[in-house]
Length: 200
Image 1 (cartoon, rainbow, N blue to C red):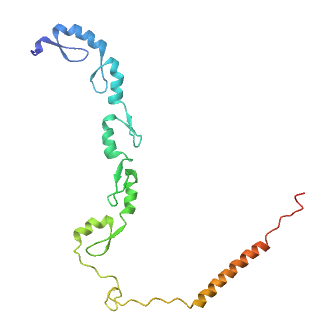
Image 2 (image 1 turned 180 degrees about the vertical axis):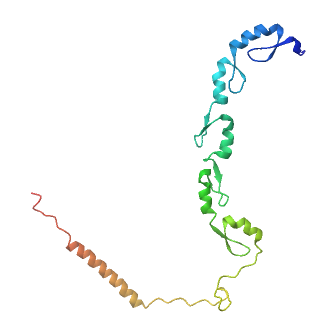
């Protein structure tokens, strides 16, 4: 099929496309009757499909997550990067939650501690990456008394504190029981009795 040279073409005044000069009159009548130019993208669209073209290509759409209305061509970017209701996983616990709640969640979640397997210190999760790069694996001494220079693990265990004599505990429980009974009896005795003559 031979290409039509520019000298034998005429630009259609409706669709701005080069049309063979011999067919320009017929084309223009058909073109102006059946096609219209989209005001938004400039594409020539069949007149009967102009509304469908607008609805499918240009009409604002609502995000299914946050119901914000936007142009269709930025919907995917919105859902992937900007939507406050898009689901993101917490970097500390890998729990999926909406992006709008992530900062508050990570503020709490990142303050949890885990024990370092190298130095046995408890490290906040938010500081774990920095700690892992600087941890030399040396177990630091457990806080103890500075008087004898020994750590709490090296000192002998204190003897357990003994509870008081059993008769004192029994005496206390007996006193509590008597007080409770006295309160119940007092409330029953001084409770106002309904007036039986007022019902007549």
